[in-house]
Image (cartoon, rainbow, N blue to C red; front, side):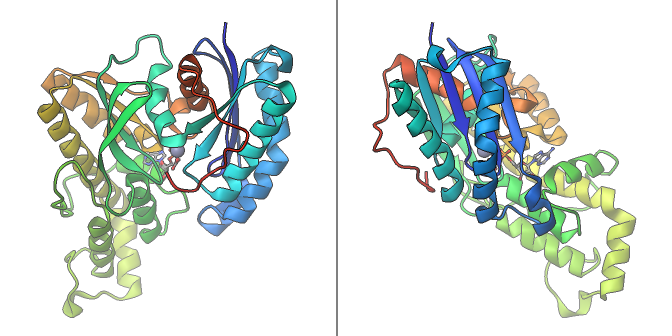
Amino acid sequence: MIKILAIESSCDETAASVCVDGKILSNFIANQKVHEKYGGVVPELASRAHMQNIVPVVDTALKEANCRLKELDAIAFTRSPGLIGSLLVGSQFAKSLAFSLNIPLIAVHHMQSHVLANLIPLDHPSFPFLCLTVSGGHTQIVLCESPLQLKVIGETIDDAAGEAFDKSAKLLGLPYPGGPLVDKLAQQGDPRKFKFPEPQVSGYDFSFSGLKTSILYFLQNAGKSNIYKEEFLATEEEKQEFIKNNLNDICASIQERIVSILLNKLKKAAAETGIKDICLAGGVAANSGLRKGFEELGKKNGWRTFIPAFEYCTDNAAMISITAYYKFLEKDFADLSVTASARS
Ligand code: KG4
Ligand code: ZN
């Protein structure tokens, strides 16, 4: 029996999980409310909150799993990518614990773990599979040959899909993080009411910054056009009036375009690789439009589709513990000299 405690602290969630032989026994998360009033995550505040949270979070995850420290076989932590101050709290804590218990330390890549969240349920994809990972910081199509052999075959050349949702929401005056709110409002709107351009990017790569610019102009022009022209410029009152009267349709149309950008590339990757087991991962996988479009596309193309449970899509430590389990099987351990890294 292999029992692993995993810690995730790459951004603004302090999380811990215990798994035994790849089965999740606990998955506890402390969210940080402190960032709400700033409209985004403040790195220094995140590190401080991680320091306050880490002991009670680990303690709760162990209690929920009915597990004592001395039963553990390894300690895992998110090594990269993320906010360096946040990563340092989790990595130093994990290193100290592994050292004091004299058990192996496992360093996990956060984006790999988003993908491997798909291996948590018993009914999981077979290798090779494709995964569209969509989060606040990343958008990737990953070809997975085995748990530890993952190849990024496409990624965003500018903003991530989550950022596209959040930045669009900000332009509409919605609070951070706006993604879930755009999703909610979109459910009452007409996705065909407004047209936003689809970027032309080669291969399986994505781009979302042009969409953001076209939404900016579209709102500045109170819906008359989504290209910049002096004569279209609306007053601030006209712009606010337009947003107020069309909010649901605007959200639905933005969501429609973000989803079509994502799914068109996924469809191309599936067709060209011939792979039929296709997964979603990351926080944006919670988006109802994306889930629906993904399932429909899967049906049309004979894919077996997989989406992790909601609590395994947004940042969590269960995905770190499942990844660590596969690393444990391969004896892929880290040295105590390992350091956290902000970049992938
Ligand atoms: O994976 P995640 O929890 O954190 C990162 O590693 O970035 O993803 C967070 C992102 C945010 O941009 C958030 O707005 C977006 O996921 N998100 C959504 C929805 N739920 C979360 N975007 C659109 N629709 C949703 N329902
Ligand atoms: Zn993440």
